[in-house]
Every structure is written in structure tokens, then in C-alpha cells.
Length: 120
View (cartoon, rainbow, N blue to C red):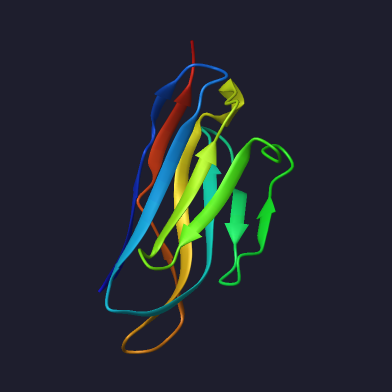
């Protein structure tokens, strides 16, 4: 079994920072692209940032320059450093990863989500 577990969400004031973590566990052979998505109430889920196995990154225009995605392959973990947070960043943040388990078969795995609330 393979699973993704996020942590690091919470309540923060506008202008503040948070760091999200997502760790993959289980019988994993390899991990490819990893990404963070978010979904605000009444809105569709949207891509926030992605990072390939080679370290190439991409960001949504709304977070460019404020958020940084990184990964530690030794720990099977992806991070999202969020700075200069705005109320419109409030959402449930989900981790996504393309994982090949030991038994084979590339599959897209999702975490359970972590709430980020930006409010004074």
C-alpha cells in the first residue's frame, strides 16, 4: 500500500508564512512528478505548483514569487513554502504524486488534504 500524508496547515495572518509537507510511504519503487493543488469553497481544484523528478518547477500565476516547491527524494517528501500569504490563499491543499510501487504500475496518488486559512 502507498499513501501520501500532508502536514503543516493551519491558521495564519495575512502576510505570514506556512510550510506544508507531504510524505509518501509504503512499498515505493520510484516517485516522478509531485505537485500541490488547492481547492477553495465553491471553487474547482487548481494546480498551485509542481516539481518533476529532475527538479523542474512550475507555478500558478497567483502564487509565483511567493510560494516555493521543493522535494527531498531521500525522504520521499515534497514541500511547499508559502510566504506573503493572502486571504485568497485560503483553501484545502492537496499533495499529488506519480508513484511506481514495488509491484509495478505507475499511478497517481493523492493525500487527504490540509486546511490553510489566512485571516486576521
